[in-house]
Image (cartoon, rainbow, N blue to C red; front, side, top):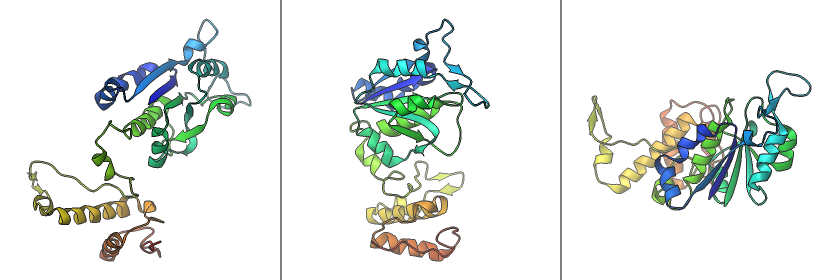
Length: 256
C-alpha cells in the first residue's frame, strides 16, 4: 500500500515512517510512502501558501493554487484522496478497514483555518475527523489515519493480535497483565494464572463487556450479542454501579 501525504511540514512526518513497525513494513515492501511539500508548488519567491479568507474572519486559509498543483503532481486519479479536518466524518475502525483495502491513499494535511473549498470539491473523496476537537496540525491527524490503516494490512501485525482488539466486534479490549504476579501489592487475577483456557476466555469476555459498559456505553446500543454474552451482560448490569443507557430505562440489547 502506498501513502502519499501532502503537507507544509514534512519534517513532522518523516520520523514516523523511519521508526518501529512502520519502518519494518517498508523494508518488507508492504508499505511505501511519499511526503509532498506543498510549498514546493508555490509560485512566488516567498513560497506563500496562505491568505485571508473572503468574507472576513480570524486566521488564514491555505491557497488553492499551490495545493492543487501539488495534487496534480502526485496523480490522484485512481487514488482515494482524504482531507483530515474537524468537520469531516468520524474516523473509526470500519473506515480504517476500508482504507486498508485501497492500493493508494492520498492524505491532505490542512493548516491554519483549513483549505479552500474549491480544492475539496475538485480532489477530495473523503473528509475525515479523528475526533471532536481541533488540532493545530493536520499532520498529527494524518498520522492517526495512517497508523490505524497500515496495521490492518496482511503481514504487518500477527492476525491473531487483531482479533480481540477494541472495536473489532464492537467491544473494548479486556485488561491485560504481565510479570511480576504481584506489583506494589496488586495481584494478577488468579484466573489468568490457572491455565484453564475456557475459564480465561469467559473472564475476558466478561471484562470486555464491563469495560465497554462503563467507559463507552454508547457502543452497546444496537450491538448484536450471542446468548453467552447477553447472559454475562445481564449479570453485570444486575450488580449495579453503571450509568447511562442501561440504568436509565434502557435494557440489554435483544438478539436479532
